[in-house]
Image 1: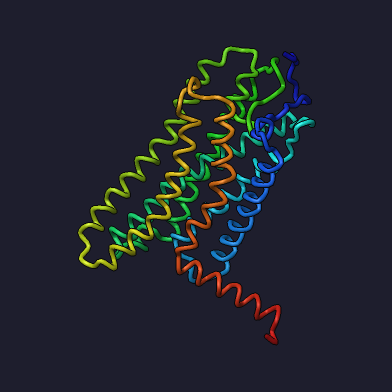
Image 2 (image 1 turned 135 degrees about the vertical axis):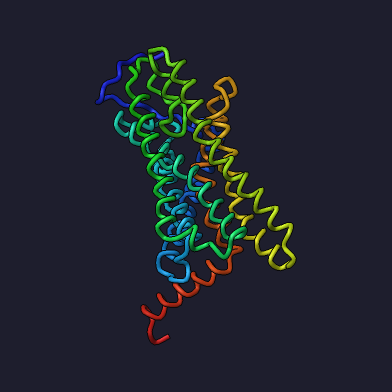
Length: 316
């Protein structure tokens, strides 16, 4: 095994999913397509929500924040992962590794908290429709958005600083899709067992309260829906919640496998596959899940495209 001493000028070598694949070119092409899909769909959804005044309501403000997080998250991880080739080292500097880890933790944690805020928004809309604009006023809405970004920023900063303060004197190869806490700790030449336990505990503390809030919100929503007299109202309420629940299941399912399960349940190949799912696949699918069955979003998209066509081709 190659031994080295880490300094600010040293770097790491990312060994991700492409190295273990039997068809790396096919997998690279698939990831590239998913990444482009994520960029276009999230960017388009953000544009529509920003430009169409009819979508300037709390539900779509929160959806726009989710699209922004997904767009940034997949851009932090996927382009660097695509640079991995069988006969060429995918190097990343010490500072670049720290920045990538910070951004991934920051954006992933912010999305975790935002999903709970989105569940609360649906709870208020369905269970307290007459007071919706009281509970979800612009000021309250922006405060809840800030409560997703700020704690996530502070948490990610703390994790990154503490993880990168360790001396790394083992192999330079990070056997992961990106610079992530546990694969990096395996390279440390110091006892990290207590810190790893703390990371698991903090991961559970960050994931469980939002998940409890989501479950509580949807439990109350279910009771309200079951007591609705109108079948049409019941169907509409369930439809507005189904998209969010799908995203919640995909997000929490993958993140729990990485950040909550003990290290004995982990192996590099499995972790890489899970990481691809929540950093590339999920961000690509989220905008489609939210928009394809949403008449308001599709209507806004047609209006925005219609205005664009009228401005660029006035004679048509």
